[in-house]
Amino acid sequence: MHAHESRNDLKALYLPVVTAMADRWAEGKILNPDSGRANGYYRMTGWLLNYVAEHHALPKGVHEMPEGRDRHGRTEPSFAVDFDRVAEGFSLPE
Image: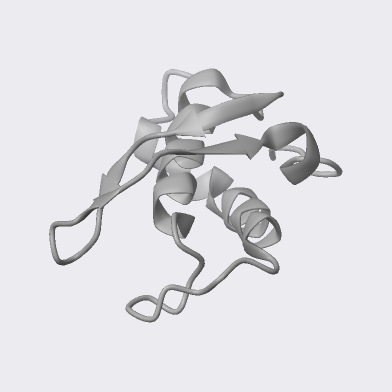
């Protein structure tokens, strides 16, 4: 990270790529009626945004997304994401 770039600046820079990758991941998945997004979409997006801001690279291989909670406090299970497929053709801006 350059001295003048904060983690929030990096997240803002990377957000369009992360969102596009999350949208690709969500294609064909069942939508959560509360959010209108695939179950796990926001957890995966948050995990990926933190990952790229920390590592300045896209993840490779399969990574487990953390367990979560829905707005009613119910536990949502962790799930695996194959980033070799999800990240194909994407790159981070400089």
